[in-house]
Length: 92
Image (tube, rainbow, N blue to C red; front, side, top):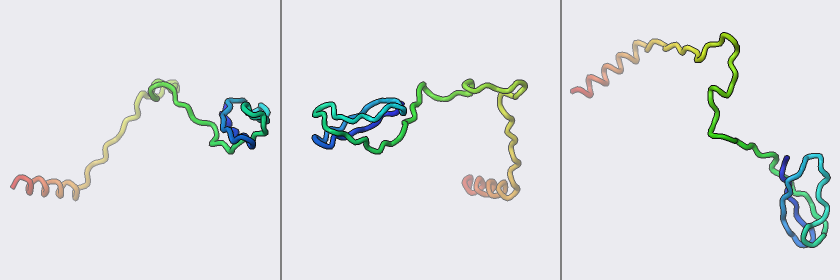
């Protein structure tokens, strides 16, 4: 359920009301009983509960491996030669 913000047109009182999306908007100010307008909202907020997401939070399909195997790509020859040049310079 979203929280709606209202402002009184008579006394300027700002207040929030936690109500259903299907509920009728509030018409009267709780302080002076003057007419109120509902202010444009920021929408429903996302609420994260708990300490985070874990691998065990999601079901695996039957027969699916626990973790996918990651293949290492071979290092290109150019990078290997640059690496050895840097190592030799550092040693000198």
